[in-house]
Image (cartoon, rainbow, N blue to C red):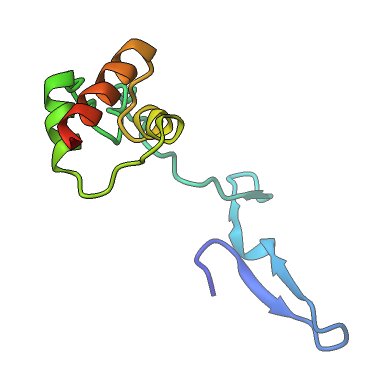
Length: 109
């Protein structure tokens, strides 16, 4: 049984009903008034939440080229390499992608 409401079960329908009479409080003139829930204290406005993923500094092309050279598995076709750069490394500049591709091709030979 909850402190604010009493639960009564009926045998004929099997449904549960709540009895609000248990939650009533006597008023000075003899009538019953519903009990008030205690007010919750207001909390100060929350500060702006920090993003869950930290903002990473943009890696330079020199660091990215070193990373690519260390990678054991790189695409052999330019279109697939461009897709890798755009999606995995977040490089959208076509000139940088083409420069990295040429660098990788020269270092493979």
